[in-house]
Amino acid sequence: MPLMNVSSAKENILKKIRQALSESTPIPFPQSEGSHSVFQPSRQDLEIEFAEQFTKLLGKFIFCVDHREMVDQLNVLVINQAWKKVFCREEKIREMLRSHGFETSASGLGECDAAITTCEGLVARTGTIILSSANPSGRTVSVYAPVHICIAYTDQLVYDIRDGLVALKEKYHQQLPSVMSFATGPSRTADIEKTLVVGVHGPKQVYLFLVDRH
Image (cartoon, helix red, strand yellow):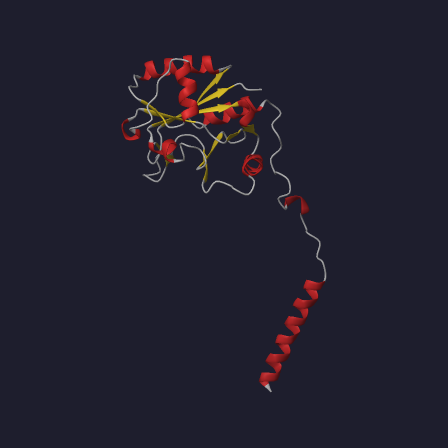
């Protein structure tokens, strides 16, 4: 008799489940289903939004009207910081820099003072640099070097991370990079006695040279 009661109770539960699955239940909060960003677009230019957020995170932001101004600013930075060796693995960037009289090294990442890379995009809302393994520099250069210098362009700016992921999908289609990372300012940790320490497991400084390309 107890077995029959258990079986009957189980059948009642299954019946209710089947009935619930056959009837559509309205979503209580349809606006929260991820079809739209929860963040409202910025009312100011993306360049300004990114610069504000990036500098809040201790990033160093430099806006340049063209490559010539960028190289001039880069030369000033190298002189002021007394850097002896700047590493860059990306041949197109090395050629561009060389054409304006700035020399970099493609070897000896471990001995460099700073390393230059490009990026996949910039997220204005969070001041984030999007990097991927598809870039010739990969992720190693931006993490291993004591100072990361990123060269980016104004047409790479998007408002939110969601927009950045959409742009990556449109660029690579079904061949997405195996690794995509989002760098938001210099590396930091507060695990040591709740004290913020910068540069523990990544660059101590991050410079973003934003070149106008509209």
